[in-house]
Image (cartoon, rainbow, N blue to C red; front, side, top):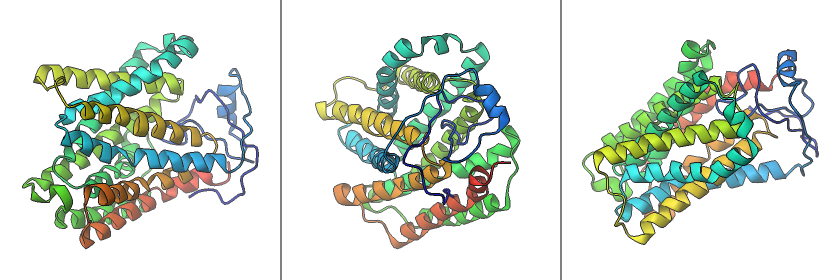
Length: 357
């Protein structure tokens, strides 16, 4: 859980965010909490790096965090609007990553060219693999919205922290805590209720709603794999370079699939391309960038908890603009899933925000 100490009006952010140990979150920069003393190993890894202090009003990181969550909550709505204009799901997924990659490229080549050149072949391989996982995540999750409701899709894809917790003992040698097991069981119960609830709204008439739920869950597994890989690779790479590389790798993979599959790219209504552009700019660049920025000033556990507001924001937008009214079982199941995620990350939160040893 988030630290209970009152934040200082001037919060210290250390850049660049690289260290010899795993970062505080799966793909986030290392967080220096006000009043905490980083461990010696981290200081040794950073002592050759320049540091700078950014003075911010104490409310600004919280405001940026709220804006970031609001931005990522628009993703499902923009996907649905694009699909309604006849845009193939694979094209929507590729466009999101292509636009984000192109937008980051100037900053990477102008400001971070030395860091880009310093990437080893080994790290390039793992970064490309992470990009593949990210591409599969977007492809499966976006396609799930063709078959199931926004609430079901977004809640199921948000279960990724549970799967990261299960993968960590194998790939990151991190122990599996009792709260993780309890959270997983609670989330599985919630997932059962969501599956039994049916699909109100536009997806109600589709005979393959469970297929959509399965695609959303597969998307959660893929983003969990992406986070697990990134958690190890990011300890050695500049955050901007890493982000651009995984976006580019994911975009390249999806472009290849589109080319091989003969997916329609041209000849769509103008609104379809507008929704693609907005999808790449609002939830991807603005939303995720602001979340990463807030992680430089706020405890990672607090940010992770607030990000669980995405299904709520997406559900409100779907109800208001798409006419999707969630059923009682959907609401109950979604609550159990989100509660399970909170439980599963409880021990990790205590580790991150407890006293430094």
